[in-house]
Structure formats: structure tokens, C-alpha cells
Image (cartoon, rainbow, N blue to C red):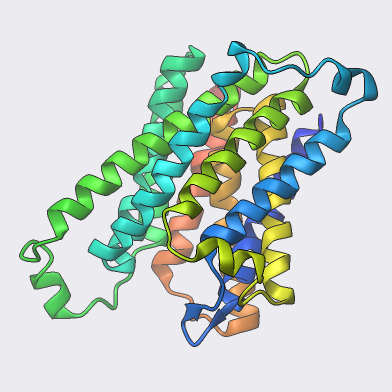
Amino acid sequence: WTRSRPLLVLTLMATYSAQSLLISASKHRGSFAYDADAAVLLAEVVKLIFAFSMLSPAARGTLRPSLKCVVFAAPAALYMIQNRLVFEALRLLTPPEYQLLNNGKLFTTSVVFRLVMRRRLRVLQWLALLLLGVGMAIATFQPRASVSDVRNFGERDGIAQGVGVMFIASWCSACAGVANEWLIKRSPNPMEANLWLYLFGSVICCLQLSMTPGAWLRLMRFEGFTAVTWLVVLCNAVLGQSIAFLFRYADSIVKLYAVCAAMAFTTSISVMLFGLEVHFHMIGGYVACAISMCLYYAPAEVLLTE
């Protein structure tokens, strides 16, 4: 089943949407009662256990640390830097500003994908990716920002730093994702590649957790963990597995479109469950994303037919 692209895309969409909804449900009075870094570490450990259990006994017997395995630490370190920068960006920017600037990952991922994977893209495909970024920017735009926020956008001390942080975070995300895909595609055994990725990811998360005083004690006590928190951990683990297999049998561009589709699906679920108010710009933005997907994947001869 891991070789089926439609099934992988649907799994990614379902887990990505469930992740957003579960993380929102795990909040208590607007904040988390548990340590988010601890939840990320547990998710990495669950992914590591799953990857190890999926290896054949013969493959387990041949597992040996080597210099070739060290390269798997690169995407893990980039992901850690990106996660730290996201927290810093949210400190400097308002949520609407963050959501708007976060769409920059669509462009950086496209550029890094073209350079690293050496995949030629037609001019129409570049325009489709540009339309995807514009569509997501429109869909995530918050029109209810106060007049004072708009006037103070360029006057706040942290706005320039916030834009710079998001710029670096976008490139870290792009390099980490494409490097991850490059390593997985060139590994003879995808489960072994996943194992090394999750092993270094767990080590990096341990280092990140050690930066917070008392974090290990709270983790050993599972402080603030509820049934919903464990569902968040499990969902993150499944999401990581689906992304790894998507990188193996598809590519980073498919992941971009799958994540955008998942955001549209999450919006529709939020409308039904939480009474989220729908605006015209949201519908228009997601329609632009759908048109972008059709333009990117449609064969050239189809686009020229009358």
C-alpha cells in the first residue's frame, strides 16, 4: 500500500487535518498543559520503533553505524532549527502575519527541488506553483485585522526581525524536506532510511528538550498528558511515516499540493464542527489552488485541446 500515491496523499491529508484539529483540542484555556517539545520527542520515538519493527530480521542484522548514516543528521538538524525559528517568529509576528509569510515555503521548496533533484519544470508549471502560493496567501489572509495593526505593521520593532526569521525558516524547511527526499530515494531500503532519519531526529529532539530546564522531569511524569495528547503524538508519528513514503514514491511537489488540500479539508471540517465563519476570499483562494494543481499536472497536449 505504501507504493500507492493516491493512498499516500489521502493518508497525508487525513493525518495533517487530524493533527491540526487534535492540537487545537489539546489546548486548555488557550495554552498547552503539556510540553510540546516532549510530545515531538515521543512522536519521533514512536516513528523509530515503527521503522525498526518493519525491517526484516536480515535487514536488522546488517544495521551498522557508518559515515554514510551521518548524512541523515542533516535534515534532522534543519528541522530542529526550523522548529525553533517558528517559535521565535510567532513571538515577533501576529498569527495572520505568520500565516501569510509561511506561504513562502511553497516557493523555496520549489526552487530547492529544482536544483537538488534536477527535475525540469515547464514555464506553465512554475506559473502553477506561483498561483498555488497566491491562492494559499489569499485563503489564509485575515481581513479582520484592526486598523491599528495595519498602521503599525511597519512601525513595530520586531517586524523586520520576524520577516527575516520567516525567510530563514522557509529555506530551512525547503532544504530539510528536499534533502529528506533525496536521501530516501537513494536508499535501497526505505524503512532503513527512515530508521536512521528517526534515530537522528530523536537525538536532535533530546538536545532540544535539554535546553528547557525541568523538561526531562516533566516528561518522565508525563505532566499534562491526556488521551488527546497521546492522540497528537500518534497522529504526528503516522504523519511522519506518510511523508517519508510520499518522498520515496512521489516528490516534494506532491507533498505541497497534499498539504494545501489538507488545509482546505481542515477548514471545511472546522466549519461543520466549530462553526468557523467562511469568507469569499477563503473559497477563492482554495479554488485558485485547485486550478494550480490542474495546470501543474495536466499534460501539455491536454491544455492545448479545444
